[in-house]
Length: 365
Image (spheres, rainbow, N blue to C red):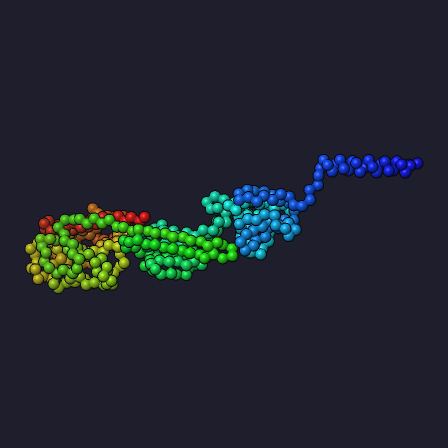
């Protein structure tokens, strides 16, 4: 039979054992340690909550804030102010540049070309020299997003939504030489901070004109300029004055009406094939071959007229493209890329052979 004395002794020994075990394995009350860092990764198990406020995100347990961060993202999407994120079991967290990224399955946030979730606003000027347009985009790290921005160019403001293309002429066209400044501004909201982008581009064209037996004219000229065989009219001089059309007299009677193509370079070439065939008052002067040459990002050469009793040859950059009064190619329109245009005219009267060459380089910086 167990005596009361033995029961008391057993209870005392049991209490002593519990005290020893507790001293070896102390029980900590409260949450596990949550690091307050700007770049780290950790895992939490328990009823933790990530809550987004107006200007910061917090990890909470039982309504108590344990750590604060910049902004919270869950599965790649930013939380809105007032939203919470929880996980049924473990919560995996990454802190990058002060922002908090949450995953319930352990999948890491996207890294590489973009810092995950860091919003950006960009003015892309690639190709501006060719088409006179810029492309404005906004991104949050996983792709483009639509943001209302105030876009400024030439002292004017435009309210636009990204992504969008802006052309200085209202349509794609090579820009004239000059300095161009673009500004895009997003004022910010409760989930994205203010964003700003600016781009300045200087466009400069280096032009070299040369040739043989030609004259460059800045306006209509009906004079007999022989023995000069080729009249070259600089049509850009008309467009620089704001004209949309021009009437070019190549002799006292004949003219050609041309319109503004919005080209960077624009010329009318009027060639006479014979030194002594016609009088100075003839309607047949400088109309034996009439071609238009222009550049709007690509070169274009178009025939407007061919006549006369001699055979003619027209070559472009050394290649025979047109033959009149003889067998050969009959190409009346050509288009090509590059910086060089060299047009040659030849006839039976070799003294009237002529060459017009334009070489240019556009620099954008």
